[in-house]
Every structure is written in C-alpha cells, then in structure tokens.
Image (cartoon, rainbow, N blue to C red; front, side):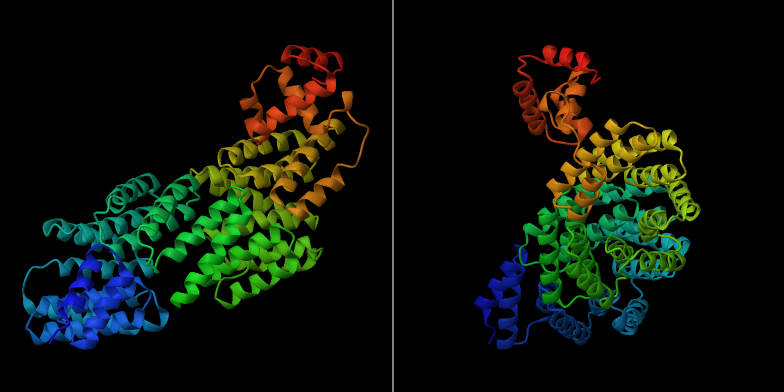
Length: 545
C-alpha cells in the first residue's frame, strides 16, 4: 500500500517550496511504494532544487517511462524536455541532452496536437542557436516560443522566451530595448509568477547580462532581489552560488572586503556541496582578488591557481599580483599573452585596464596608450558609468606618463566622480594617487601631498596594505601644516572656506559625513575657533585657499 501520510506531507511541502522536506518525504514514499508519474515529477524537481541531480534525473526518467506506459505522449515529451534542460549546461552530458530533445520532438510530432510543449522545444532550439552565436535564428525561435506561451497562458514559458529575446537584443547591441525587455521579465520573476527553476535561470542570466554591460546599479538591484528570493527558500542549492559570487563582487567594489571574502567562501562551500563546477573557478578567483588587495600574496597565489585548475583563467589578477610582488617582467608577459587570447567580451575590459597599469610600470607608454584608447572606444559604445570610470582612469594615468598633466586631471576628475557615484572607495583612492602625481608634475607639491595623504587614509581604512605602503612612500613626513592640522584637516578647512556643507565635503572627499564632522571638530579645537566663519577667515589669512 502507498504510504499516504508521507506522500501527502511531501506534496504539501512541495507546494510551500520547502524543497528539502518535499524531497525527503517524496523519496521516503517512493521507497515504500513506487510513485505515480505526477509525483515522480515533483520528486525530480525537489531533488534538483536541493542539489541531488542524479536522483532528479532518475526520477524524471521514470516519470517519462510511466507517462509512456499510460499513453500520455505529450506528458512524456515534457519529461524528456526537462531532462534535456537539466543537462544542456553540462559539457559531459550534452549528447544525452540532444538525445532527449530529439525524443521529445518525435513524441510531439507523433501526437499531431498543438501543445505548450512545442514552445518549450522552441526555447531549447533557440538556446542551441544562441550557443552557436546564430542570434537571428535564436531570436526567431524565442519569439515563436513566447507566442505559444501566450496562447497556452504559460507564464513560465513566456518568461523564459522573452528573457531569451532580451538577451538576443543585447547581443545585437540593442542595449536599451534589450534591458527594457529583461526588466519587464524580472517583474514577473520577482513577483513570484514564475516556477523556481525558470526563476533561477532568469535571475542568473539577467544578472550576468548586467555585469557583461558593466551596469553595476542594475546588477546590484537584481542581485539583492536574488538574495531575497534565495533567502525565502533556504533549502535551495542551484543558483545560490551565483548569488553569492555576484554579491561578493559587488561588496568588493563597495569596499566591504571582509564581507566579500565571507560571501565568496560561502559560495565555495555551496558549490562544493552541490558538485557544480562551472562557477567554482569564479569563486576561487574572487577569493584570490581579496587576498591580493589585502597584501596576502601567498594566499592569493594559491587561490589563483585553484581558479585556473577549475577552468577560470587567473588573469588579470595573477598578473597584477606579480606586479605587486616586484615581478614586473612576468606581469608584462602574462598580460600581453592574455590580451592576445581574449579579443572581446567583459574580460577584455579587465585585461585592458590591468594592461595599462602594468605597461606603464614597465615604461612602455605607447602600448599603455593603445590600451587606454581601446578602453575609451569601448566606453563610447556602451553607456556605462563603470566603463566610463575605468576608461577615464586609464587615460589619466597614461597622460601623466606622457607629460600631459592638465589633460590628465580632466580625465581623472571624471573618473573620480564616476567611482564616487558607484560607491567604489578603493578606486577613488587609486584615482587620488594619480591626481597627486599630476599635481607633482605641475609643481603643486602641497596639493600632491594632500592627495597622497587622503589616498593613504582610505587605503588604511580598507585594509589595502600594498597600496597604503605606496601612498606612504609618496607622502613622506613633512612640517605640520598651520595650526598643527593634519593634511586631511587642511583639506577639509579649505572646503569649509568655500562655503560648502559637511555633506558636500563628504561627497567631495569620498568619506562619511560623520568623519567630516570629526575633522571639523578637530579643526575648531586645534585652532581655537568657534564658527565656520572664523575657520574661513583663518584659511584666507594663512593662504590655505
């Protein structure tokens, strides 16, 4: 007899998205008495969502056979499709995937019946075209799938197909239309209108598209939504690794390096438990990046090697590590080879930015200029604040090396403003170092020291030990400014004298408003002043403005 209470518990857990409970109960019921094909489908889905891929495939295969035995050809075709869908991203299972797709197509053709499964097969065909970079064919197939989804009122199919259409538009550089379509699809996904497997696929794809376009604000918004979605289903294993990796990358950008490191380690644990390898290399690379920035070079070297072993090329991070270790010749050789191998895509931008830095360190200014100019060209094609910041920073650095300090300052101020808008303190500090070098070239030694001091303070706060050491070397001890003020306090005093508020000062210096208030209090105490007006007068009297 069927273990009915356990089976009912499994069904109820499935409905409330308690995937681990659903998997345990349905598996127990199946062990007692073989499940019918509908419940086998539930078991297959629950097993997939808790990372038990082998169990999922086995249950889905049994469901397929059971539907065939009952003469339900179209339901059997649907099971075949989902078997193929779960295998398409696994290089060692693609032949199996193609076999299941072929079987699903034959069963539907034999049925001679209009059905929603035809739309799912159109989607699969479109994905295969997209993989071969036949974007036009993929777009046609996705459009046909979306029409079938609308005909049969399948929100899942419509979401997957329209998301595919959006990605095709992006591939054709129709960025505005593509992002608008993806945002519309995400409304359905975040609104809970779409089944978990499809929701996870769309979340990960859209967030990856945002990163590919360097649209960090949109990436932040959808990554946060993905976090909430994963948190609502704590048993969920697929997609969570991607969530943690993207969150770690954004936390690193925003200067929360310890949190970024923790999220990357969590992702590594999740992916190891799920035995999913495609993202493992990205996790190790992210861990290596945090180690490198903090000056933990041995740990960074080890993590870059782990990334390489998992299939993620360790560049440009490993090349920058070699530069930090004083091995500039090895860094140059690595970055030149990487630039030859990677001709386009998001990684190209990272390599060009690192290449400009490394080539300048090797005094190859002409090659660094080529890298900076290519970044500028890319920034002109894609409306991205992040890309604009990267390109402007590289242009400013090269212009300094070319002896063109004034044009360099224009580029560096653009970069600084962009990085501040993106809340990227490490990059702001790097730009301030370059601004200091430009001031030095122009003979403004005091202005240069103020920039170096500010950068040093920011690097120290971040824990960027190698950069802090470089900033300290460029800002040697000097006579204390007027009234015993520190370099940063002089900078704040100068801004007070221009009449700006604490909030405006915080924004200008990329520090918190609370820190500005502390500096203002110190200035008043050290100079025995009681008002901003008196501070302004002091600044003018001592020619600090």
